[in-house]
Length: 517
Image (cartoon, rainbow, N blue to C red; front, side, top):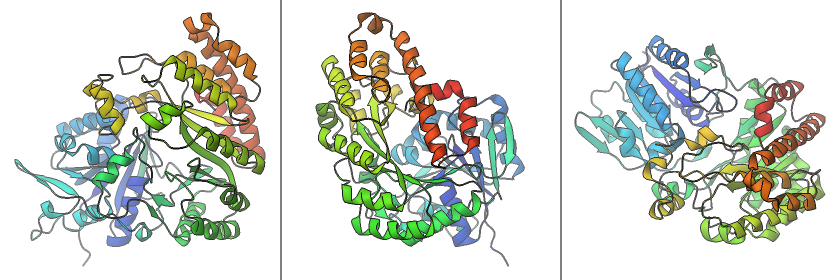
C-alpha cells in the first residue's frame, strides 16, 4: 500500500529559475516518491510588477483545483508584501490549507513570517521539508519536533533550532520535466516548465559564500546556519550530471551559467572539472569570480574548457568605500588585472557595482568615475542600486545613522524587485534620498568602447548636465542600445544565444535600453 502524503504545492515568486522550490520538489520525489506541484508566479523582468488581480485569481483558483493541503512559498525579502497579499486572499477563499514559508526572508525574520503562516522553515529546507511531508498524517508524530521548523499549534509557537547543513552531494539533478508545473504570466496560466525553452541553463557547483560583505545576507546566514561547513562544493561528477540533465530537457541549450556566489574556490576541483567538462559538455559557460583570488593559471584552465564570460563584483570605484563600508578586500590593481587577463584570453568580462549609496561623498564619486575610466576596455558594467536587506551589517548601520527608517528595509519595502537591479532608470526610490542619476549615467558610459575617456570627463564637468541629468540619461540609454547590439552580435557569432533570443531583446527595446552593459 502506497503511503499517503499531503497534496503539496510550492510557489516561487518572480523567479522562474526558482532553484529553491525545484530542489525541494526533486528531493521529495527522490527520497519519498512523492509528487509536488510547482507554480512559477511571474517573471520579474519585462513583466508587470507585482501582479494583476486576474493573475492573483488564477493563482488562487489553481491552488484550489489542485486540492492543495500543504502550501509552501519560497520567499525573498523583496517579495514579502506579495506573499502577504496572496496568503490573505487565499485564507479568505480556502480553509484548511496549511501554509509553510521558507527561503531567505523566513530565515532572517521568522517571527514576522509566523504571523501569516502555520510553519516557517529556517535555514536549508531539504530534510525539514521531507520530514514534514512524511509525517503529515502520522498521529504518533508531532510536527513541532522537526528541526529547522517553527510550528504554530493554537496559541503556542514551537521554535526549533535550525537543521544541520546538508551534504549537497546528496541532491539529485533537478527535475525539469513538465509534470506538475504551472506558470502564471501576463494574465495567462500555462502548464509545463517555464525554463526549458531558454538557451541558457543555470547550475550551482557550490553553496555558501566565503566572504562577509556588509550589504549581503550571506554573512548573517553564516551566523544563523552554524550547524556545519557553510561553503560546500559539489563533486565534479554531480555537477556534470546536472548539466547532462539540463541538456536532456532544454531543447535549445547554448550556454551554462554557474550561479555560485564565487566560482573556482578549489584548484584541484577546477582541474578535474575542466578536463571532464571539456570532454563531456563542451558548451560555453560563465561564472562569478572574486578579484584578487582568481589567477591567470586558473583562468587559462577554465578558458580551455569553455569559459567565455567572467563576472566579478567590485561594488564601487573608491577604495575606502569598498574596504571600510562594504568590507571588500579587492584592490584596484586586482580588478584591472582581472580585466587584462580576460582580454588576453578573449573572455568577456562584466563588473557589478553598487550605486545610489548615501554614504558616498562627491569626492568619492569622482574617484569612482576616474577608476572606472582606468579599467581597460572592453568591459561591461552592471549597476545595482543599493538595497537594505534585513539584519545585514550595513542595514543596521543605516538604521542607527537614521539614513533609512525601519519600514524602508526590504520586506516592508520591495525596492530590489521594484527598481530591478541592473537597470539605468530615473525612478523614485523608497528611501528619503534621491538616486544619483548624474553619476549613474557617467558610470554607465565608462564601459562603452566607443565613448572616449576625455569626452566622459568633459561631460562630468558640465554643470548643465548635473542640474538636468535626464539629458545625460538619454545619452546613456542610447549608448546602451548600441553597446548591447554589439554584445548581442558577438554572442550570436559565438553561438551563445539564438536568433530567437535576439528578436526577444529587440521586442523589449525600452527594457533593453535600460539594462546597463
